[in-house]
Image (cartoon, rainbow over all chains, first blue to last red; front, side, top):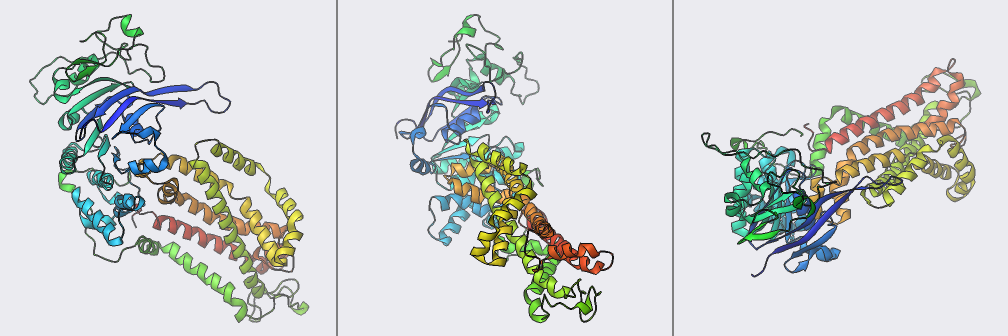
Amino acid sequence: MTGPLLRVKDLTKNFQVGGGFLSRGADVVHAVDRVSFEIAPGETLGLVGESGSGKSTTGRCILRLIEPTAGEVWFEGHEVTALDAAAFRALCRDMQIIFQDPFASLNPRMTVGAIIGEALTIHNLAPTKRAFTDRVVELLETVGLQAEHMRRYPHEFSGGQRQRIGIARALAVEPKLIVCDEPVSALDVSIQAQVINLLEDLQQKFGLTYLFIAHDLSVVEHISKRVAVMYLGRIVEIASARDLYATPLHPYTEALLSAVPVTDPKARRKRIVLQGEVPSPMHPPSGCHFHTRCPIRKLPLCSTEVPPLEQKRDGHWAACHLRS
Amino acid sequence: MDGSTLVSPSAEVIAPQRPARPFSPWLEAWRRFRRHRLALASTVVLLLMILAIALGPFVWKVAINDIDFAARMQTPSWSHPLGTDDLGQDLLARMLYGGRISLAVGLSAMFVAMTLGTVIGATAGMSRGWVGPALIWLTDLFLSLPALPLLQLVIYLFRDSLKAAFGLEGGVFVMIVVVIGGLRWMPVARLVRAQFLSLREKEFVEAARALGASKLRQVVRHILPNALGPVLVAATIDVAAAIIAESTLSFLGLGFPPDIPTWGRILYDAKDYLDIAPHWALFPGAAIFLTVLTINFIGDGLRDALDPRKVM
């Protein structure tokens, strides 16, 4: 297949804050600000950034769980944001999501079988009761659970098992793209590895494409082919995982990478400690969003002009006036 | 979070093995309900009361309006197990007859209030436009209406036309149910809306949306079952409130005609004779109390039985 599976162009999402009836002027949170990227079939794109950088909102906008304010999302040549309800429901079979919180993402009043099988009912994928049960059992076994688990309720499972149930639910429609919204952030480190390995196995087995959202750089490095870094709603750098981790171009990425703990206690390296806090996305800084904390900034250029996301090296894009 | 265990590799399979048995969520709920002793006992008591008022008049064949001035305000005896009132009418017969009306009014009014409140609350909770705020204004408007004067007005206006449509008792019954239910849905609506507002943002609802579930499916399968616990408790309290509201209406002479006994009406008639004939007030009072209490316990039991997270 040629061309990207998913193409996001200038995706923007603003949230209105306050501004109800009779109140003076509403504030606007610029959660996602003209984000563009592409994902090739079978690829994993990691999306990293700290809390509030807009990575989860980006993921949800792609699935239209949140309606984007502006921009385009193209999936296999279809404009997702322009689809009518029926066409969008059909598209739900191709795109799925796995959530961060394994406790909030499963309906506590449904059995595991009903949760996993819901998609089969919605899309009429199981004509008979027998087929329904068989498929649910198959899905359970695919994610490393047992057939007898289908009669249990979510609260009877551990965090890792619940995350597997969430994965099985997403797999039920045989999707092509899965948005993994911090799927391991809420889990113990040992379970994180199991779930990541499961995701990798499933990718191989079913040829899945992942948009892998996380704030843990080492997790992303392990699973992703390419990585995009977000800061305050914008992508500041996007490159292959190897390039990004070896030779980061954007000063924010450098600072992020310097904060990853190293396993060798004797190894010393320079920590780049950023000054100040992340500015409010309600009033983001002018120009380059990062200029208020950037160690290499050059005023007034950085505070007046928005740096475009440019290809600085082969396949390595960054949004910085100063690095080339 | 509820009963979460931190996982370690060895703890991946923590759920204990259970013997295989036929499985259905309703059977499971019934099994759990049976473990709730108080609720089970209450169900038995309530069923006995319903049985008594349903079959009682066929067994105890004393007429409700059999006036006997020789036996006025008698204390309980073999010929009048619950005593008599100031006209010498048999209280047991009147209680059995009145219980039909009181229980029917209580349950129907609760049903009206719950249905109305849930529909309005759910609509308000799911809408993202102007419908939600508009419905909440309406709810607040109804909450701020003084109930009793309104009841009097409605009853004054509609009593005759309803009587013509449904007959004397039927007309009053419909009117009282509609009036009580129509004035008690507001707390339910607010409760349901608040639940919906928080539940609709939960990730499991998002997951259903991502699977392509219609709005109706999201509500019926995911949001409503999780919102129902508090509503159920409110419902049981509402049965009690409706029985008492009917008593109040009868007390004020706005309910059923004076010659038709209901528990509330009997209580009202007895109030002037509390010092000479306390039994007259005691039995209808106890009947209302018992109904309210048992329904409350059943509500508790149902709420727990329908929540699979509760360990029982």
